[in-house]
Amino acid sequence: MPLIRRDSPGASPPRPEGDTIAQLSDANPDTRWKAARVLGKHADAVPALATALQVETSSQVREAIFTSLLLIRSDASARAAAEFVRSEDAALRSGALDALAAMPEVVERILPGLLQDPDSDVRILSCDLARTMPGEVATRLLSGLLQAEAEPNVCGAAVEVLAEVGTAEAIAPLRACKARFPGEAFLGFAIDDAIERAGAGRLDMNG
Amino acid sequence: MADRKRILVIDDARLVRSFYRSILEKEGYEIDEALNGLEALEKLLAVPVDLLIVDINMPKMDGFTFLRTLRGGEAPISVIPALMTSTEAKDSDKDNARAAGANFYMVKPIRADALIEYVNLLAGRRA
Amino acid sequence: MGDREPPSISEDEFARLCDFFYRRTGMIFTEAKRYYIERRVFERMLVTGSATFAQYFARVRMDLDREIEEIVNALTVNETYFYREDHQFHCLTTDLLRLRVAQKAPGETIRIWSVPCSTGEESYSIAMWLLENWPEVDKHDIEILGSDIDTRALAAAREGVYGARALSRLTPDLIERYFEKVGEETWQAAQELRESVAFSPVNLIVNAETRAQGVFDVIFCRNVLIYFNDESRRVAAENLFESLKPGGFICLGHTESMSRISPLFEVRRYADAIVYQKPLEARRG
Image 1 (cartoon, one colour):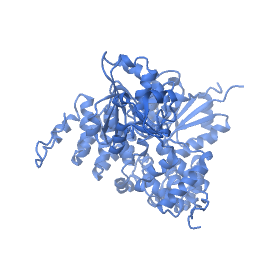
Image 2 (spheres, one colour):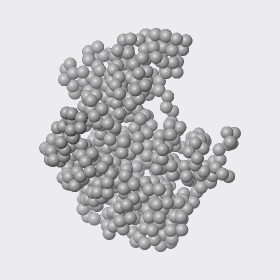
Image 3 (cartoon, rainbow over the protein chains, first blue to last red):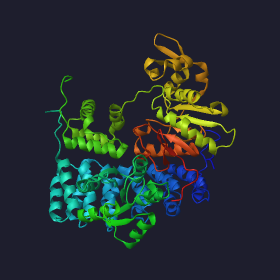
């Protein structure tokens, strides 16, 4: 069902939201797809989009819903997406992380909380979101995590990101982490790589 | 002399792929890499392999979706054995892995000796 | 300053850049291309006023002032010319059209979209290729549409005037039959060729504009999505998905992959090309 067009300039269009939200649960996946896409322009549709995600069976419609949460780009839409990081459904977790990775300026506000989530799998997956932050921010957040984290898989996820974006400030926390987990072969391997990458830096235009 | 067996490592962490590569190349395997399920499907159409090592949480397409898609597709790539890896040790995840079509399931962090043993088993190097 | 040999990037810095590009685009840069890449990076560092590689890499990662578009442009070859990546046209007439015809009602028009079409080389190439290589070309109604956001490029496409470089992959015989010489080093596409393609302005990320073009059997969307940011890539992919008939195909540029763009399509491999297909029916999650 198309949005109702303006018939005259100055007349404000009737808000289609009520009908469009109902279409999110239509039996026809094409109808649900179109509704999901339209709602990317409606910031107050976040709760409806989140509810729809919980029951949507079509992978294409789910993708469109996550894109709309991304387009809305608010604290509410980021939090709504972040809830699916802890889903039992791996596809919903991936979809949520893809959307969150594209809105770093909003995610920056919720990331510290996610990195301290009681669920270690949420912490693991959230480390990856630091990849989209400026190097200094990612280094600060993930170095802090490394100092206190007990789960080697979480440390490994943090190290993976620091290898790509960590600054020299990450080196000491990385070394300390390696010392805390002497028996972990993968973690030691990963930390060695990350230390080398974080310390590199020879190309300087000024000499 | 048999051709070297080829393994596709599917994990979104570069360091994980690198770690497996460093272990398995020493054992005589050729290693290809992909960082999500979509890339893996694309690569398998071009170069089939003898074994998949596939993680669960990846961008764009997770490991379960990848494996179900692969298994639902055409031979010969649909029947390539798959070793699934995960950070989760719950029984339900092992069941999910089997249902998706994994032949074996390992919990991270993975030890080199265990990896070698199961890869040799699944890639048909040893009975 | 202009004569300075660029200082070398350290191995680890080079590695970080390569890993970033692999993750983002799927492109793999090897040691063999290192000197070439260093030069381009050095040029971009000068232009952007980045004092260190770390600063420049931060600009790239944050896509400041569309730096990703700049560096990708600098690193890839971007000329447009007739019969560029013609293995995909070969795939079109060998596999894709056959499969589409099998799924269509008799008499149903075959619709092909070239977007972005730039100055028309790709769109006219498709028309020429079909005439030259598809035995069934006379048995079907075929509509070829070229679209671009740049209206000046569209005007040039409609005019259809090209220089020697654009025609360099065409045989003299093809040029003779499809073009008229209109200047010292310029040729114009023959009127019949120009009349076989329609051109329209379209912004790929505006759904109203893509939807207005209707639905297609095959879309060529080559070498544009790689420049879009994450959000725009998703929106464009969803628009392109809507613009395809179920079972329709989309072809990307040779350095591009849907694995970095969208999970909506299914990957298919044919003898000449890897293409992506809209499923015939909605996929259950």
